[in-house]
Image (cartoon, rainbow, N blue to C red; front, side, top):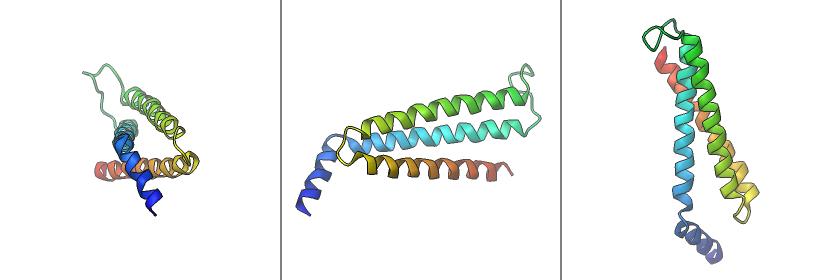
Length: 113
């Protein structure tokens, strides 16, 4: 138990938790952008003073959010690959990222309705 505690403290000293929370925060922002893009696909508004249709704006938001999400997840997985037992951390955090992203998109869709 003491060895595990020392590893945990070593992770805290290297700002591991800060990096994890930063990646989760980035993923949540990407999920909100994705939800906004899908919301724009279903609306009939003409954003940007009528220059673009909502379909173009929606697909642009979805593409930007997908790119940012890919960058955030790949950065997080790259950082985790340097740690011992990194495969377990990668799988667990990827699943957490995925669940959080899906839930945030569902929440935004519910607020839209």
